[in-house]
Length: 219
Image (cartoon, rainbow, N blue to C red; front, side, top):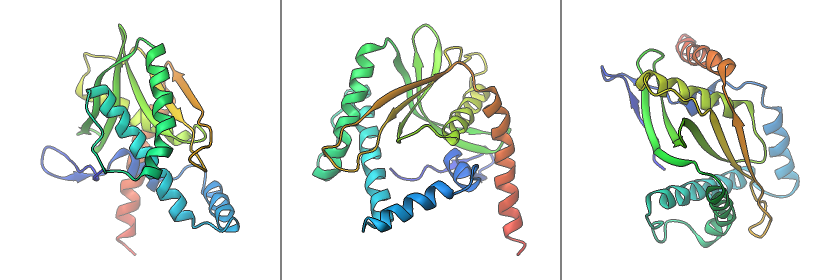
């Protein structure tokens, strides 16, 4: 998926939600270092493992998008191995979709905040009598930055659609990563009625990220 470019109305480029969260790491990098070390001890290149997982996650995400819009996955876009890794996660999504009444009103919706000067692409706005924000993740755990990402998207939505409140809360649909194509995949649906604390934190993270970029140019 190409990198999304976000611009203010005056043409100024601004950073996206995921770029900001990657640039302002909360909780340190100890977990990442432990994982990279474990990959090395197992004789694997941690970058190759990371990229394979990212490709499978991207593929599963696109399969969901195609399902929502009634389209076919582009042929030959992904290797057989990546498709094998993505398929169980996609089937887990299908099971969830059959069990819930939530339907997608909007998907992959890019928005830019003029007030806080950042952009983001919302995975989905879901509807079942109430509007809610949905996001898909391929991960073996729920991490703090996922809540902050949802909060960043919520701020964008409210700035653009103040008359359409997200009274239905926040849904995170998570698929576990696979070490091998035939490993079982777990699926979890996480829900929060509100993310007020994360929403109060996110604008501060935007400012910290922008200030750090300015400071780096002074050295």
